[in-house]
Amino acid sequence: MRRLYAVIRAASFLLLATAAWARIGTLVQQAPPKSTAVSDPFEGQQQAQLAGAKLFARECAACHGLDARGKGKVPPLNQADAREAKPGALFWVLRNGSLKRGMPSFAHLPEPQRWQIIAYLKTLKRR
Amino acid sequence: MKTDSKRCSRQASWLVFAGVFLSPSYALAGEGPFFVTYTHQMEEPGNLEITTKNVTGKPTGGERFLGSALEFEYGLKAWWTTEVYLDGQTTAHDSTVFTGYRWENRFRVLPREHWINPVLYIEFEDINGADKSLLEVVDNDGEADLTGLNSENRIEKKREIEAKLILGSYFKGWTFAENFIAEKNVRHAPFEFGYAVGISRPLALAARPDRCNFCPENFQAGVELYGGLGTHENFGLFDTSHYVAPTLGWTLANGPRFTVSPTFGITETSARFLLRFAVSYELDQFGRSARRLFRNNGVGQ
Image (cartoon, rainbow over all chains, first blue to last red; front, side, top):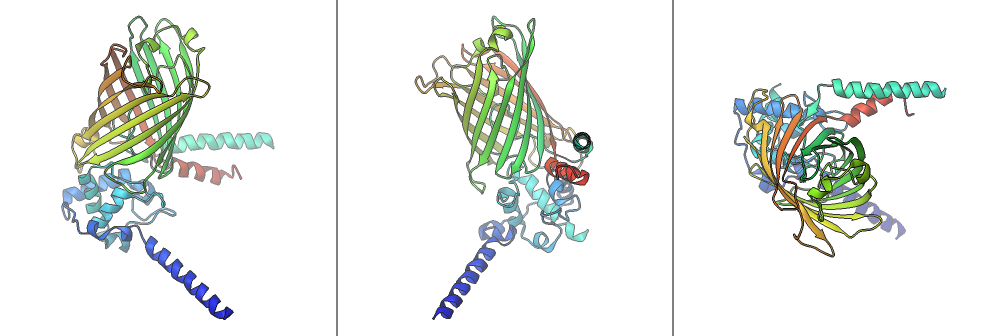
């Protein structure tokens, strides 16, 4: 009987830990489905990508690196997570940030500038 | 041994300053073009923003003055920003005096962005009666507080706790901010109240692709309205001063930000006209640079 309780306890712990891990996931994964449906109005526009590169250097490079490879605990942005993420999910991350993980909100940037940054992020896969 | 340690610390301190000031890394400074009103924008973690906020005017029956506050704003966490102000002023035909310091902390309450976003603000200030930095207006503060001799005014000690509820919103490029202020002298005096509201917008919402000083997105225009609301015993607008202040901010391509705001008093208690101007510069990841320098020098181990 004791062994059964121990197994149940261990299984519950594993279940809770898995649930907690699944809930945390990456920041992009936390974006609600509604937000991911939005598309980037500047997608594929070269001028917007150039503007996005300028904004990235000013707003993001200090933490994520000018080459977007990340620094220390700060995640890279030229990896599959960001590259394959839907523009709407990236927009949600930029708007909300994550106070817990130290990612500030960039809601103070006007929406078009946030989309320009995302248009630039999408070009990183080709670099 | 102690001398070596001191020398090492001094060298490390110089390295920190040289490192951060010679570094090409910078970020866009500031929380909009406001002088008195706070938005809910927090300082990015690890960034240090240095600002000098100045105000000049000539009160009726007084001499022209220049009040100045040197501000060091640091992002401790994404949800916690701390600031230290050093205040001083100079008055024509009188003197130049250091008037005290302020230490303020802002805490973001909600983890996500909403249509309205609250931030809690708590400040301790140890200033004297000669202070003319006018970083907020509460109670019956007015033009009369800007007159008198520095030697007499500085005798009055003001050790005060100030709390603010900051509410901020962004909507289609517009920034809206509302602040409710409560202040209390720790020794005596009643609770004093004030308010500040502001609205601003960049001249262009999308950025231009080229690096430029005069791009319209580098300019932010807005207007602030602030004033006193009396005390808890005498709450209201009677005999209080209120100001309306158009404001314009300009951020250069390499980081420094200039802000100017002609300020107009709209009640009899208010100063007729004040001119505010500020220069700020934000040092990206100052905390990380400082830690790295100290680690490399083996100081503080």
